[in-house]
Image 1: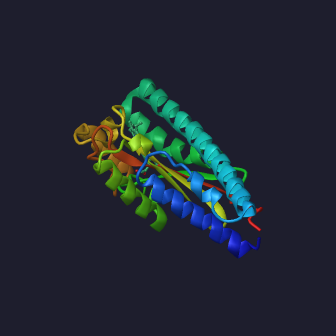
Image 2: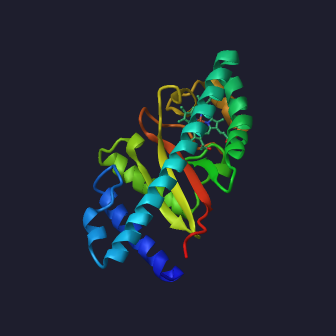
Image 3: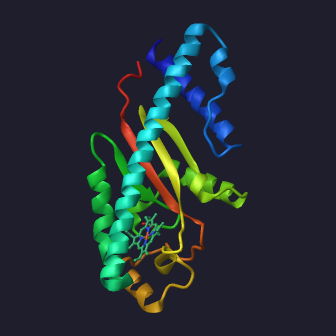
Length: 216
Ligand code: HEC
């Protein structure tokens, strides 16, 4: 199968899976799709399905590690010397941990529709996906169930919404302590990341894979 045809098949598979996932929080692949066409095509669809699942599993694993490391830095800093100190720790540690876990061709980052650090601003695809997450959240889905993925420039991209927990409200909520808020705004003069309520979509993790070499 040539590269263009292959990418087309992958794109087709993804658009079908996304259409399906729009109705269900779990991304599933249609059994019937692999039964259409010749047996060879069916096998190729199965191969893509497997590769896709492996990439998703790896992306999720990186997110789990990133999230655990961030939370332990945050909680450690709060326990050590309160929320203001934790803001400074977040400022140093969040980008450092993201960089540390962006290796072997993979990248991991966080973004949001309302960013604290402008470096985390969403690109076009991320912004569109955040808007779709927001629509699904407003329609009743849990932020913790929202995720999506795509193939872009021969690299796999996975995005997963981050729900706002109780702890997060101290620095991202509707009534941040005035002195803490001042400290945040001194560090982040164009901060937009307040006003969230419990379970809101605070933002999303974004993971990109290395270029997929076996796409031809
Ligand atoms: C002590 C205050 C504090 C708490 C508590 C806190 N954050 Fe943040 N958050 C920050 C700071 C500071 C940044 C900017 C980090 C940087 O410079 O990259 C940030 C950035 C973020 C970002 C990246 C997007 C952006 O706005 O730049 C996300 C997503 C995020 N926080 C989610 C959360 C979640 C979810 C929780 C609860 C588990 C939480 N935060 C708790 C201070 C806090």
